[in-house]
Amino acid sequence: MSERVVPQCCPYCGDEELTPEEEPSGAWKCHACLRVFTVRLVGLALGGDED
Image (cartoon, rainbow, N blue to C red):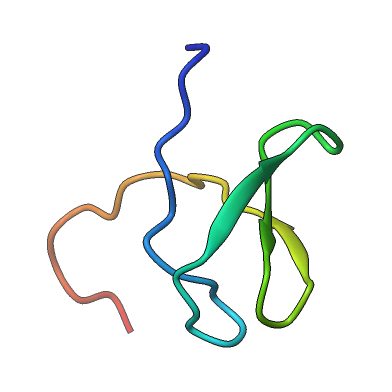
Protein backbone atom coordinates (compact mmCIF):
# COMPACT_ATOMS: atom_id res chain seq x y z
CA MET A 1 0.00 0.00 0.00
CA SER A 2 1.58 3.29 -1.05
CA GLU A 3 -0.83 5.67 0.71
CA ARG A 4 -0.46 6.48 4.41
CA VAL A 5 -3.16 7.35 6.86
CA VAL A 6 -2.45 10.72 8.44
CA PRO A 7 -2.17 10.55 12.23
CA GLN A 8 -4.62 12.92 13.92
CA CYS A 9 -2.17 14.15 16.55
CA CYS A 10 1.36 13.75 17.85
CA PRO A 11 1.58 10.80 20.31
CA TYR A 12 4.08 12.79 22.43
CA CYS A 13 2.56 16.27 22.83
CA GLY A 14 -0.91 15.99 21.25
CA ASP A 15 -0.38 18.78 18.69
CA GLU A 16 -2.21 18.40 15.37
CA GLU A 17 0.29 20.11 13.03
CA LEU A 18 2.04 17.13 11.40
CA THR A 19 3.83 16.79 8.07
CA PRO A 20 5.25 13.71 6.33
CA GLU A 21 9.03 13.17 6.51
CA GLU A 22 11.15 11.55 3.80
CA GLU A 23 13.25 9.43 6.18
CA PRO A 24 12.63 7.06 7.77
CA SER A 25 9.94 5.74 5.47
CA GLY A 26 6.44 6.49 6.77
CA ALA A 27 7.61 9.07 9.33
CA TRP A 28 5.78 12.18 10.51
CA LYS A 29 7.19 15.41 11.97
CA CYS A 30 5.43 17.32 14.73
CA HIS A 31 5.97 21.06 14.38
CA ALA A 32 5.23 21.75 18.06
CA CYS A 33 7.74 19.41 19.75
CA LEU A 34 9.95 18.77 16.66
CA ARG A 35 9.82 14.99 17.14
CA VAL A 36 9.85 12.69 14.12
CA PHE A 37 7.91 9.45 14.65
CA THR A 38 6.39 6.48 12.82
CA VAL A 39 3.16 4.65 13.51
CA ARG A 40 3.05 0.91 12.92
CA LEU A 41 0.19 -1.57 13.12
CA VAL A 42 1.23 -4.56 15.21
CA GLY A 43 -1.94 -6.63 14.74
CA LEU A 44 -5.55 -6.95 15.69
CA ALA A 45 -6.74 -7.85 19.17
CA LEU A 46 -9.08 -10.81 19.29
CA GLY A 47 -12.07 -10.71 21.63
CA GLY A 48 -11.82 -11.82 25.23
CA ASP A 49 -9.79 -10.75 28.23
CA GLU A 50 -6.73 -12.89 28.73
CA ASP A 51 -5.05 -11.26 31.73
